[in-house]
Each structure stands twice: as C-alpha cells, then as structure tokens.
View: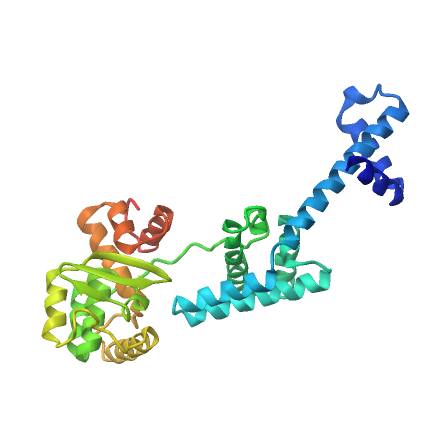
Length: 325
C-alpha cells in the first residue's frame, strides 16, 4: 500500500516531496545531517502517509449519506414541536451548503479553518452578529451525527470566527401578583396552562402530552420523556377546572397556547396590570426564580427544569440576575 501511494505521489510531481523535505530540514534540525537521497526518501514516505490519511478520510465520508442524515436531522427537529427551530436549522444548513457548493466542497469535508471562512463570509455580507450566531448554532447542531458516525468530527468545535455572545440583559419575570392577575383573566384551559408552567416549570411544548398521576407528571418535551413532581394545588386546580388529569391539554397545540397567552399578556399590560408583555417562557423563568430563592440549590433547579447540563442552568440563572448563580 505504501509503495502504491509513493508511486502516486511521484506521478503527481516532485513539488510536494521537495516541499516536505524542506519542512523536515527546518522543523527537525537533527535530520539535517541526512544525505540528500535519504532525506528525499523520508519525504516520500511522509507524503505517502499523508495520502493514505486522505484516502482513509475519503472512504469514511463515502459511508455517510449526507442527504439522508440531513433529512433525519430536520425530521427530528420537527418532532420536537418547534416549527421555528426546524426552519432555523434548515435555513442555516441551506446557507452552509450554498457556500460549500461555491467552494467545490462537501459539507462533510469541512474543517475548523473552512468553517472560519464561511463565518467570515457571512459577516462580510453585513449580517448581524446575532444572526450569524443563529446560523452557526443551527449548522453546528447537525453535527450531532458524530455520535452515530464516530469517524466524523464537528468542525465548528475549533472555529475562532463565531461572533462572541453579547452580555445578556437581565430578564424580567412575572411576580406572584401578576401570575394571579393572568390566571384570573384567563379561561379554564389557559388558567391551568399558566399554573402548570409557572408552578411546575414546564415548557409550553410539554403541555399537549402532559399526564398527571398523583403527585407526579409525565410528558414529552423537545423529543425527550420527562417526569417530575407536581404540586397538590396545581393538581386540584386541574380537577376543579373540569380537565382530565390524564390529558388536561389534549387537543390543544403548544403554538395555540403560546399565541393565546401572548394576546392575554398584551391585553393586561395595556391596562397596566402587568409590567411587561410576558411570553410563556417567562413563566418557566418565574418558576426557576422561585425555586432557586427557596433552595439556593442550582442542582435542584437543573433537575426540575430538565436541563441537559448544569452550565445551561447556571447561564439561565445569571440571565435572571440571581446572586451566586
């Protein structure tokens, strides 16, 4: 194999061999005493090994069906119930693919240096830093496929061009009085949705699949099963509203709940009953604030919010302006 690769290197010309020979002399002073023919022989071996690595990588890439992996990735994003996330991922990959086509590259053949070039080109187009970060995050998420194809590596992991994240402004969350104002003004289904998000910390996407069994709940959120404790007052409120504990939000989509909540918050904010026009995620923030203030335990908050890592919870709490987070 090495002999065949050496002949291949020779057929491509002597320039690579001479270049490697010069680098050997420069970077390895102890080899400067080698005779010219010995140095050339060593250089040919180095070039052959490099070609062998290139062939091995090309063979690895041939085993990965990019279009199939792309379709799987977008489908999985769709199953989480977030249409916005699916569109973000698809748009980011589309921009990366268009750039790769202009460069004559496959998206699977990218390196950190080439990713830097792509990000630099995005910046040169006048795109805002936050928008570039979204593109980079969306495209980078695709590279979770390295879990299924260990021969691949996420090229974004070593990139240096990703725009830095700006210091997040402190988030304002509804207080207990504002939660009561919203619940009093809501219809039964929306009232219970507010109670579950603010008092159990669930995402709006977790509500359609929610099922309550005694003091525990189960649901699916972001494509993952989640379970936890639900307070007795929330469980009793669901029963008082005439909703089924096994499926209190059956037949209602997460998008519908979020839209109705925005309309409610807007109406109450315009009548000065709320300090801000809150979103459904602010109710989850409200839960995080209350739990951390009660426990001062970031691990308890991480578990209750079902965050993937403690780092996510810590950044979450810092954005809420909680001391010690």
